[in-house]
Length: 238
Image (cartoon, rainbow, N blue to C red; front, side, top):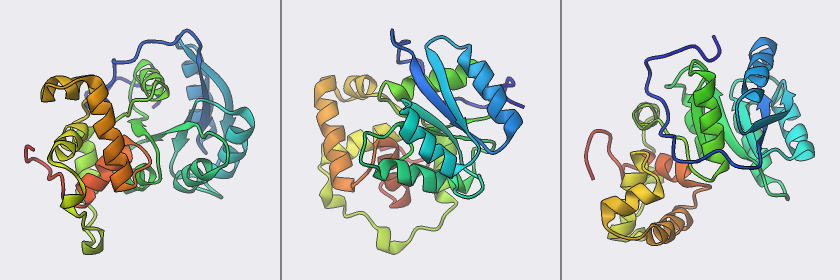
């Protein structure tokens, strides 16, 4: 059911105010009822304008490039081209790509990890109330990431670590490792700044260095890399 109340922990949102200019949104889902329902309900939320829908990954890429939405709410399991492939194609395009948020039924879906690795900015659960999904869309449009830290840990650790993926720890400074570990808990830049006792601008610089050194598409992708390579260990404080 779309947007039903749930006791599951939601993403770490609530940090981004509704913009004066509405966030434009494209919804990609192969289930017509889900797609239409989300489109109608999200279109009624403050600060969001739904500009189109897509029934599969091929349509998602084509319509995103034509309509140029701020955010694509992307289902993963779709015909012709899945959400992972569609995300990769969008990010590889010549134009400035939209932000991609994966929407899924199960928080331990291994496909979601692959989508995050392909460059999606985060994920939300279909069972979340629609206002929560709308808030996640706004947060991502504002440049933040949407993480369910506990669920992300479960997804990543369910996949055996390939020793060839081992991250050379020396690539990051001690401070950059600290910032990455705090990113993995879902903290925003201002929250990391308070934790480290530095300015938000300094944290922004550290985050940029982390992304560059890890070859990550965005901060969510960096967190996935950190878990996959063992730099961040589930249940162990940094």
